[in-house]
Amino acid sequence: MISPQILKRIKYVLKSRQISKGKGKHRKVYQLSTELENFLNTINTTDTLKSYLHLEYDGLRCKINWFENNLRSAIFRPSKKNQVSNDANYLILYSIFVDHGYSYENFNKLNFIEKLNIDTCPYCNRNYIYALSKKGQIKPEIDHFFPKGIYPFLGASFYNLVPSCQTCNGFGGKGSEDTYRLDVKSPYEIKEGEFHFTFVPADLDFLNPLRAKGTIEIKLDKKHDPNADLFKLNELYLKHEDHVLELIVKSEFEYSKEYRKKLQDFDKYALSPEEIDRMIIGNYNRADDLQKRPLSKLYRDIAIELGLISSSEH
Image (cartoon, rainbow, N blue to C red):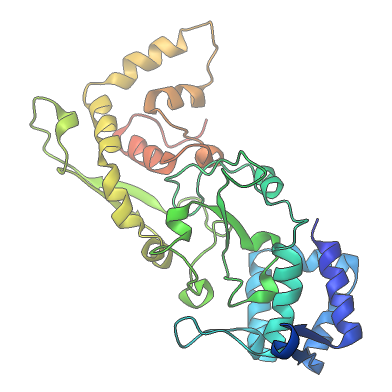
C-alpha cells in the first residue's frame, strides 16, 4: 500500500505550501503554485487518490494532456543530456509520487509483481521475468511506461508500472524515451491480432533441415510501428529462426497428425484440445496464456500458418 504515504505527503505540501531540497547552504525551498494546489486538492482524500492511482490507459493519456494544457512545467523534457529540472511544480510532484510513492520503502515491489501473474516480458515476449527474492536479487525491472522522469505525476500509477526484462527497459531499448510523444502503446492497450508473425519460406534442400541456419526470415507482417521500432522487435526476432525451423520440420513430416491421434487416445491424462496443441507445438496457444512462456506468440502464429494447429481456441 503506497496511497496512505502519498496522501500524507499531499496533505503536508498543502499545509506547508512548499518543499525543501538539500541541506545547509545547499538547501533550496520550492513554493507551491496556485495551479498545483488546485490539482492536489482534487485528489486529497483516500477515495479520490485511489481512483487517480488506478486510472487506466485512456485516463493516463488524458491526464498527460491535462497537464500539458494546465501545468506544463510539471512535465520535463530535457533538451540536453543529463539535464535536470529545477521547476517547483515538477519537483513537488516528484516528491509526492516518486519519493514518497514508488520509491518509498513500504511499496513491496515483489508483491506487486507477483499479483500481476505475468511470467514473460510484456514488451517482447522473449524473456522470463520471474521474481524470487524479496531483497531483489532475482526480480524483473519495473518500468514506468510513461517515464517518471518526464511525467512525475504518474510515478505511482498502477497501470503505468510494467514488469519488464532488462533488454527492453535498458540501454538501447526503451530506457527513458518519451513513449507519449512517440505514440508507443502500453501492453495494456495492445489488442489480439495487432501484432502477427510470419516468415519468408525457405528452400530446405538440406540433409538436415534443422541446420538450415540463415535461410528463413521471421517477419512482423502486422505491428504497431512505434513499438516494433522502440523495442527492436524485428531485429531481435530474426535471432529465433531455429524455433521456426523446428515447427517447419514438424509440419513437413506430418508430425502433428500422428502425434495428435496418440495424445487424443491417451486416456491416462485426458488432455484437452488446447493442451494437445501445446504438446504439438511446444508452447502455449491460447491468447490468454501467451504470457506464460517466451516466444509463445511467435509459435502460435507460425504454427497456425503451417497448419500444425487451428486458429480457433477451442
